[in-house]
Length: 68
Image (tube, rainbow, N blue to C red; front, side, top):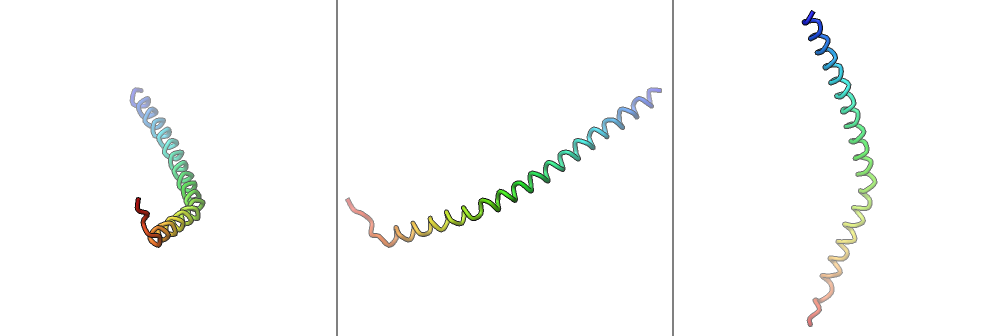
């Protein structure tokens, strides 16, 4: 009788772990999709900022340094 109880406990524990694993896998997939979307949204802004930094550096090099 005790063996049947232990088998039932193991089966229930495995079922709970399976449900948790399935949920975590789905959440990881959703997080991956969200991060890829965020990266696609941010990429043009990052490129604009880098270009503005390049232009600012070029302008600084063209102007002579101010002496006090």
